[in-house]
Amino acid sequence: MNVLFLVLAFISVIIWAYYGLLFFGNLRKKRIFRGNEYYDKEIIYPSLSVIIPACNEEESIRQAISQLLDQDYADLEVLVVNDRSTDHTAVILEELKIKYPQLKVVTITDVPTQWLGKNHAVYQGVKQATGEWLLITDADVMFSPGSLKTTVSYSLENKLDHLTISPDITYKGFFYGGFISLFLLAVTGLYLSSKSAGIGAFNLIKRSTYQEIGGYEAIAMQPIDDFSLGKLVVKKGYKQSYGFSKGLISVKLFDNLFAMIKGIEKNQFAGSNYSVPTTLAFCLIILLLHVYPFAGLFFESGWARVLCGFAIIIVFAIYNYSKKYIDVSLKHVLIHPISGLLYFWAVLNSMVKILSRGGIEWRGTVYSLEELRKHTI
Image (cartoon, rainbow, N blue to C red; front, side, top):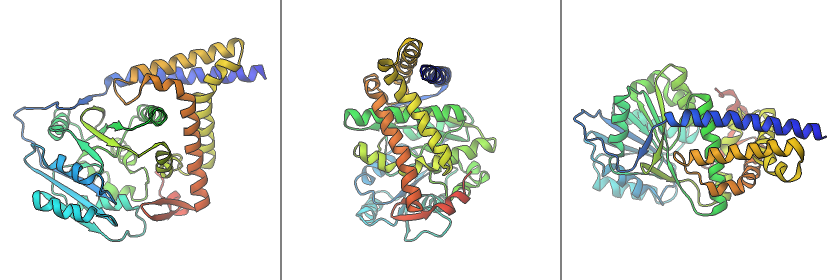
């Protein structure tokens, strides 16, 4: 048994060492976009269409739309796709149209078969858009002044086809913050290792590139639409860049920790292409990486304890280095194993719920697992 724990500790520290090299070697190459960072250069900005799918977004949509349309960007249109909202979203949009003539509203009352609701909303928005560049974002994302010129000029200067940015996350609560820290580290590690990225809060893409990769028609049944879009960009050989916000854009993900665990339910099982063995293996990896080293430091002995200690040092170093880029805090290292257990539960819960339901439930619609599995990429 001691040999088994020694092997587990060794595997854990090796994987953490890999992640350490991944973070230290690649994060410094990523662009940090800061608030109030303004590109006042004599360049001709291309026409830009912002596409926003909105379903019951009465709490945030007025502020989000106003922040976009108050920006100093000459050739700008904002298209909001009201996707079957049952709250006051439609009323707010009509009020905003009076103040902002460059606001277009597309209303959807139903979703065709072979489409997920949000994906169909984005697709319909792009059909109505006229811009040379498209920015696909969400109705709860807040934009700082000058953020559109900053990101478009950066894309032009670096000859990008696609730019995606990880936003600032606003939250309340220590344990919620700990879970967000671990979740952001996991997602960032995924993007750094996969060499492609796509974040729903900010996907800026050339219209010609969007069309060449097949647009949202190619990912019509993908719950993780943002990441799927980014994968297609890289797969088709186009130039992509992935950056981080420090004051440029922000989003409030969910109201609290338990709402977030429920909210990411649709994505976790989908991330493993609805494979039970892959999901169970991922759950074991979560326990091995995020829980076992901390438990082993107290309950193991000899070299197993030493290796667990090394793993924790690497975890601490990654937190310390990453806080420059993403919303992680060193204090959250103290509850890292608790966050790991919560993440383990979130992944397992996603699989169990989707299997028992026979599909995913999203925006009031259930999509069958059989159909979803046919459209994995």
